[in-house]
Length: 109
Length: 115
Image 1 (cartoon, rainbow over the protein chains, first blue to last red):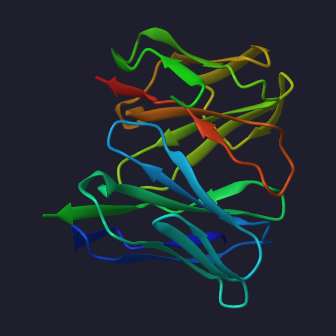
Image 2 (tube, rainbow over the protein chains, first blue to last red; image 1 turned 180 degrees about the horizontal axis):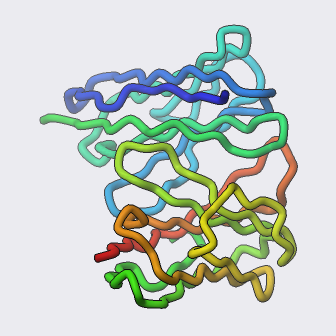
């Protein structure tokens, strides 16, 4: 079967750095997406990785290792507004997105 | 504002009611999706439309009936639902289906409660 695993919940301090991990087992791989979803709002796109390595976009970075079936989202200089759920999704061999259950990130002052 | 709107935002219905959810995208995309989001569970893909033609139906109960009259509008017709159908229903659109980089744009969702 296809499976995406990510931690259910994480807590971090304002101004700090947090890494949210995602491991996947899918039939085929056509890229990995990270989305952010604030409570009661639409998921919004953060990043896309299809090749191994680190993609940096401001305070957010996303890393991919295809051989390990592993990705992480790195958030630096955390702000209170970063409190949200972070969703990992993999595009499989049929280009269908397989979603993780999301990681709820709680930022404390 | 993602360019995808959904109405209503909240809906409470009894098991014998019939209601419809509406989604509209203003992005010029060719593909539209319905997802179900339950607490602490992965997004469940329900239906996919490409240029108004259904291309994916992931074993969804017949009490959910989609309709795509044109590439900008998508409906989900609901009838004789069960309490376990209570969830957030998300609509999304993308440029097309069947490509690697296929960023999906989501609407804010309809919070459905079935009594």
